[in-house]
Amino acid sequence: MKNIYILQTHTRTVPSIIIKYLTGYKYSHILLSLDNSLSKMYSFGRKKLFNPLNAGFVIEDIDGDFFHRFNKTNCRIYKLTITNQQYKKLKNILNNFEINQEQYKYDIIGLLLKIFFIPLKREKHYVCSQFVADVLMKAEIYNFNKPTTLIRPKDFENIENSLEIYSGLLLEAKRIV
Image (cartoon, rainbow, N blue to C red):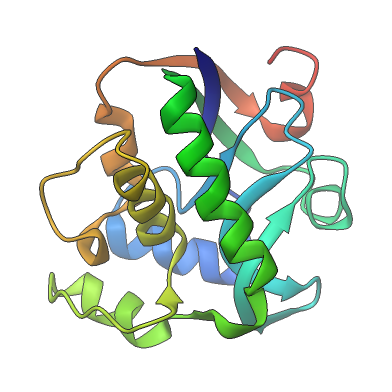
């Protein structure tokens, strides 16, 4: 058995404030980590620290520039125990994203349609919540029973067998997780 970690965050950046306002939910971003060090967190978001428009597949590090710049990031972390087979599938899926990361784009159109509950799947285009939901489903870890294009950060608080292990400032999580 292996543990993986799902993070709900709110960075207080302009895009996250807009998302929080539109969804009415405390958290606006979702990340996935395969280990409790949070040194490698997978998601879709900004690629450059000061340019939210240049976005796509990203690998964040709790000690990286982004979270030190946005050091008041609030988060909630869930631990999910999965089988070795699920972990292997998940790792292969994430490795494929990492190898081909330049092919993947942030789905601004999908984000706008999500507000109106209109599912539109665009090949190699994702938003953070869709990406994490999609890889969890493909690795046969969890099925949200709705199109991943409609998944929102709030949907991650209801994953069966997940355990909330932390809530607070992200930079303080590394001492606890």
